Image 1 (spheres, helix red, strand yellow):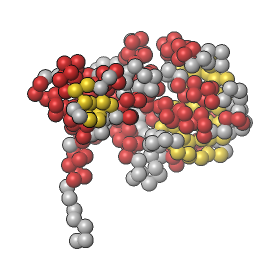
Image 2 (cartoon, rainbow, N blue to C red):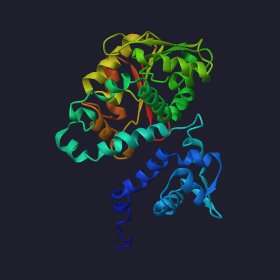
Image 3 (cartoon, helix red, strand yellow):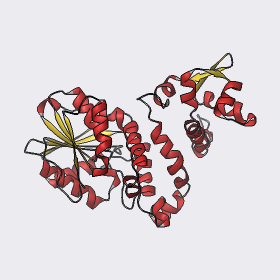
Image 4 (cartoon, rainbow, N blue to C red):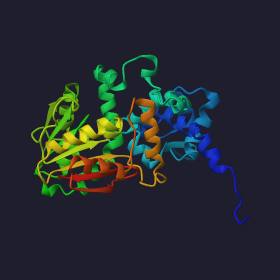
Length: 337
């Protein structure tokens, strides 16, 4: 054989949870937030973080080896990306999604084999508790944390949509399932001529309005409360679903698309984005594993290919469709009425 076969890839993936939990614990303990204040040596960090002497050095040096920390002359500091994205004091903080992963998804994914054999969720619903969204919307503090986490994981794609979609051709939009409203905010910030609506359950209103106010958009963004399965989506030139469609089963996906079709005029558009799976289903592992996460978290949700989504759009009546990459694993599917 011209090339030696090694078990390196198998071991790296098979024991990948070691690296994952090391990072998640570092986020939980505020390692990057503390180091953003000022770099420290081992003894000082051990004291500030409450680390036991036995694992302290291995833990911090593992973070160095993984590229999350840097160490020079015995002084630890953040790498460029952790400094920007994992310092809780910065508006660019996206650790909220990692905090949720640590507290919820990490233990639930330990039951993936059961989910694969039963097709059933492995989260709170497994034990007869309310579904995730019901629980979240009943607790204002958890809802705020969840909304911020969704902003963190979606922000880069929201910026991409604000700049890649031809917004000059439109005057208004509705962000359906808006959460904190970052997608609406980024579009409005990039295009002063646009007015937008954030549409979500009423409990999200104060969170959306606070975020719009923080971004100086209170006069151009407004909130409309409602359940998009029970009520019409507000009318606008463009309807957007950002990290929304994958939460639902096929019938529910098609219903939301048909409601978007009714909400826009001729020439109007729907923009759907998720971690769209490539049509060959072999090149976007994040999208495929996100679909497994929907198995863990929902009764019928799943991720889908660009061609799947385009077929649903055509079935609803949209005359033109296309798929366009955004950033990372995310792509948008656009339908023109």
